[in-house]
Amino acid sequence: MNWYEKLNEYFPVEEMKSKEHMEALLKEKSDVYYKDEGEYHVLMYAEFDSFLFIDYVYVSTAARGQGLGHKLIEKMKAKGKPIILEVEPVDYEDSDTEARLRFYQREGFTHAQSIGYTRRSVVTNEMNSMEILYWSPDDASEEQIFEQMKKMYTEIHTYKDEQFYGKSYQPVEEVLTHDEKRDTEDILDELGKTRQT
Image 1 (spheres, rainbow, N blue to C red):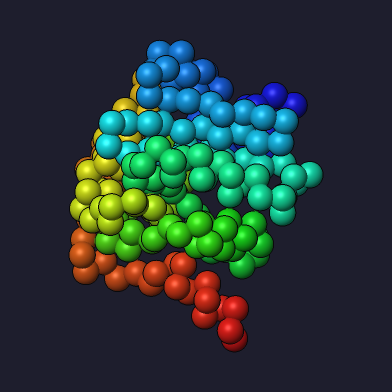
Image 2 (image 1 turned 90 degrees about the vertical axis):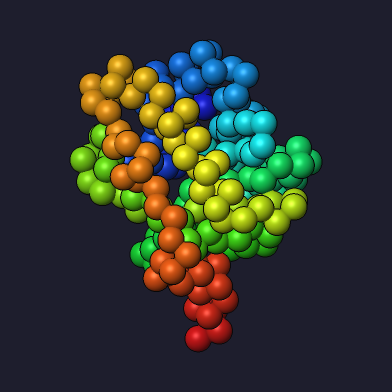
């Protein structure tokens, strides 16, 4: 399987970029968008001046539990910038979502509770809500993370979207919101509670 097939098999269709979109990012935005690939992993990420965005991280089931995910995150942390990523809320029908959140919790990530993120999939046309996690070496504020997410969304997620999908994603102001009083639980905190019950 090539790198795209591995990602495509692992991630839900509404979260996947098309192969053409990702290849264009790698080629036309090669100063920002990168692929780190090995026998047992694929890591797609964008590196901007002030932050990193992990777009996709895949670790083969054959290598799980061997610390490969930890090594990949450590490599990102070594760049000394905030790291942002999107995760699905916990779906107790899908144990992978919980395992993924527990992994990021162990790696020291924080849930950006004030940031709302909902967009319509250009593939399924369904609304898809995600939560934002981040790790910061210098305690970045959620407002800073929000501004960085907006930059990432406009430069990476929606890059030439009409060309690749025949239609555009929603504008950033419809997709991302920042509200200090947003009524949401800390999804990482909730993990601890579910374990104790």
